[in-house]
Figure 1 (cartoon, helix red, strand yellow):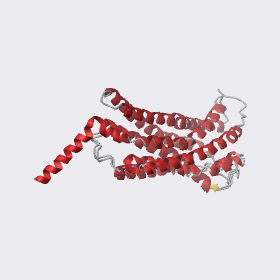
Figure 2 (figure 1 turned 180 degrees about the vertical axis):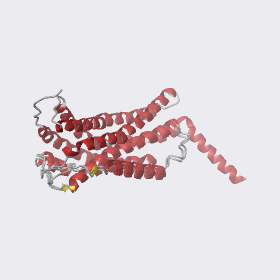
Figure 3 (figure 1 turned 30 degrees about the vertical axis):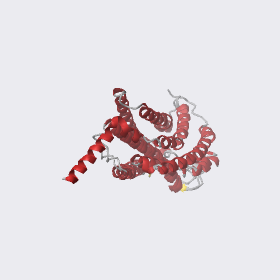
Figure 4 (figure 1 turned 120 degrees about the vertical axis):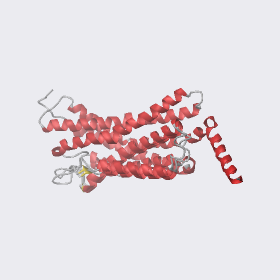
Length: 417
């Protein structure tokens, strides 16, 4: 349906809502992540392997939070970006890396938990720290590569000032970006890194829990700190590589006052294609992995209700609830409305005004604020991780005790002979 009048005060929504959300996210997220990481480090030896993914999840959050002041300044000043086009792209890049690293590591956690719960014997000795580090590095690499094309899209235009985090708050006060194009890109980059590293490490945590619960014996000796560190490094690298293209999308044109979240109007079609691929690889695939892991874990619990302790089931349900909260509130709305908003911009570029354009824009701005809350909600993962689920798993049915006894007997027998 086409309309003749497409006038709508879009900036009024951004200037009123986003600065407040960014401020809350920065304050709550900084305090929550600092407390959560402190708690994590205090119990590092107790939790071991899965800590690698949780630690990387926290680092992704902190990376993005440090870019928020630029966006706070940007919106508070009336959308005036003064940090240059390069920094504009960098802030968007950081946003994307954070987003998809978060998704990636949440997926890793889900897979680990699935393997540990459903296939404990098969995973014994395989879920090591070394592998966790390698997987983390892979997640970072994938996300960085996936986010890299975004840098090449323009982020700022016409010397108007469009910021990441507290910097974005200044921006939303009047959409004036005064930090330059380079810093505009940097804030966007940090946003992306935070987003997808969060997803990545949540995925790693899910995988870890799956392995520890379903395959505890098989994973014995394999879920090591070294592997967790390697997996974490891999996640960071993958997310950074995945987010890097975003930097090359223009973020500013003929000046450094606007710092676009996606790109300029001229490059919208190309950016939509990139966004759809990004959504598939950075969000949909990790979501399916996470759902598959916890779906299998749930089925495993139902089949062995009499042999699985109630406390273990409750801990898994708590973490599943946190994942559902993060995906339903932070990740799903953002990806849906981001692509719809890009499609709407293409329609407007062709002088086509659809009746739902206003609602898509409003939904997109709200989802942008909600997705930033993942940095404030992720500390819930630290809190839940403080409960040593592996201890409960190892005590289940005395399996680990029997196995360790067999190992000890075997060693003593060999020595005597």
